[in-house]
Length: 118
Image (cartoon, rainbow, N blue to C red):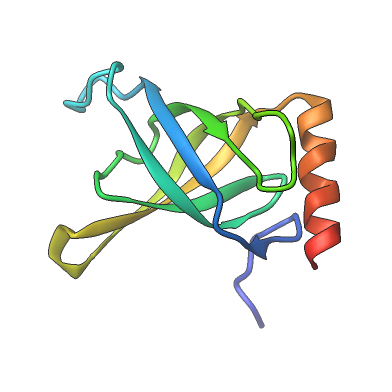
């Protein structure tokens, strides 16, 4: 039996993104002004996985800027970090995000994009 928990179809796609940390737990030393760039590994309407040179603690909340290659405007979802995995002794990190604020139009755009590429 599979331990797969995903509800939405996920596709592998590299999308450049920018993020800004807007909230972390009180026991964490990450400042809300922290921001950076990354590249997605996969995406669904429920969230995405991306690579970053900086770790972001699980539970942190982010504002994102996503630029799809075939979409004319930028999507600005908010997301929560649900997974953090270190690779190559801290050379890079994979960060799993769950979207927690996504406008209906943006959700539809991501869904159409996924259908087109799957």
